[in-house]
Every structure is written in C-alpha cells, then in structure tokens.
Length: 237
Ligand SMILES: [Zn+2]
Image: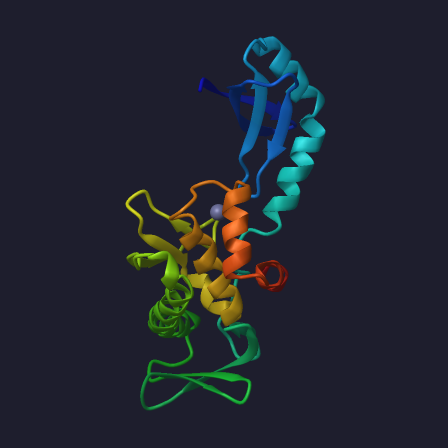
C-alpha cells in the first residue's frame, strides 16, 4: 500500500497527517485518539485533491485533536507541601509533611504522611514520594499484569517484559520487541483502570491496530472496559 506523509498549518500549529491510498471511491479523514490523522484516499486521487479536502476539514480536524488531548495523562504541578491533594490508586490523600528522626512515607486515614530527617524541603519530599511510588508501582503493576495474563490464559499469551517509565503522552504502550511500557503516573489511577490499560496493550499482542477484531477481543476479555477507561480519563485528566 502506498502511503504519504503531509502536514498543514492551522493557526500557529503544524498538523501532520498520513495518506493511505486504498481501493475506495471517496476520501475519508479520521482522527485517532493517539493524535494520528489518517486520510484514506482513492488510489487515483491527486495530492492537490487531498490537500484541498484536508484544508476544508482543518477546523474539524483541529477540534478532534483538541478533544483527544484532554485525555492525555497529565500530572498537575505539585508543590509538595502540607495540605495538598495527591492521588494514589484512585483515592485522594491529603499530604502531610513533617520533620522526623527518619525518612518515611505512610498512608493512613486519608493522609499521605511523609517524614524526613532533612526537613520539609519540597525537593526532598518529592524525592521520597517518587521513590515510594516507584516501589509501589513496580509491585502493583506486576500484580495487575499477572492478573490480566491469567484472564487471557486460554489464549496462550506470553507474559511480556514490564517496563515502568514516565511516558509523556500515553498511559501505556507496547514496544516493537513486545515489552509492555506503563506510565508510572498510572499509580494515581484506580486498580481497575490500571488493569484496563494493561489489557488494552496485551490485546495488541494479537492485533496491532484498533480494528473491529481488536475490539471484539477486548470486549470479550474485559466487557466493562469502557467504564474503566472513562474513570481513568475523567479522574486524572
Ligand atoms: Zn491501542
């Protein structure tokens, strides 16, 4: 299949799109949740025809991109001072920082209690919290992955290698080598939503795109995935 990469300008923004030349009579423009803009054009369409169609739909394309960008993972800036709200596994906790005899992070009765012997310097508190979240993420994400693999047992899925990163634009992804990357910020999400992200990516081991077969599989394995996805997007957006 012949493909082509183009872009257009919308205000000060440069918007890239991909053209796929396929056996079809009319042109179709689709904006995907991962911010990809795909134009499916008849094999005989000229570049001028395609460009003119894209220009006509520019406003709509921009609007779609804007809509999807609302669901990108976003961690609001934190000051790491007492009284601030932090999410952990879908619950809100109030941060309490204290100077103490040793460094520790504890969750108790709605409080994230962070104690440091170096005082309550926000950089120190952030370091302690990040380290704690990283440990928890490793433990919990691995457990979620095991549970999700268990659901897929009949389909002979091999457990992929898990990598935990700070991903800028996504909650999870599958690398070309088949490793599962999860965004460490997912630790803020409810466990059911973490399982959704894991299952979504695992299904890509069978189907790489988001075609009807992909969704058939996802529906079968996790029928309530839309609710889990919704919770993730609206809670953490
Ligand atoms: Zn996907």
